Length: 178
Image (cartoon, rainbow, N blue to C red; front, top):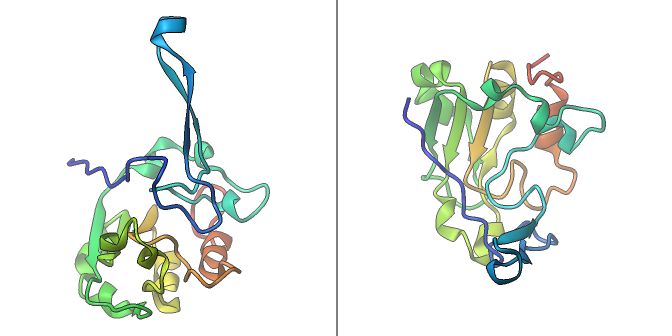
């Protein structure tokens, strides 16, 4: 199995969700004083490339460390959505174009081409999001996860996190759709 690392490098000046502090790298030990170097890393869990568990929105639900490691391993399919413009939705047509491969995937990764805005204010703009039909399709499927090259599952203006809540309400604490 080929493994591809999609993570952004954690840096002090990296883009973070609006209102969140950037990471801090604080010297803790030095070669000169302690004989070794160690750095205290301080950051929020939503920094850079990250995963949201049900506990992100619902008290008493599963945290990432409670999932078996197998939850994070599998075949991913990248669905090309780079044709979408600002504010447009990822529709079920994007799924249908790739239906045979979609049915064999463990993870669905939606490539919006939004990574070109990483590090700019435009990254936090009106990026494309999945519509209700795609969210329902994902929930009804047996997927281990979905991913995007944007800051979130919901539009940046949706402070209620409507899509997040719908997704995590439909999963039990084992990550299985109920």
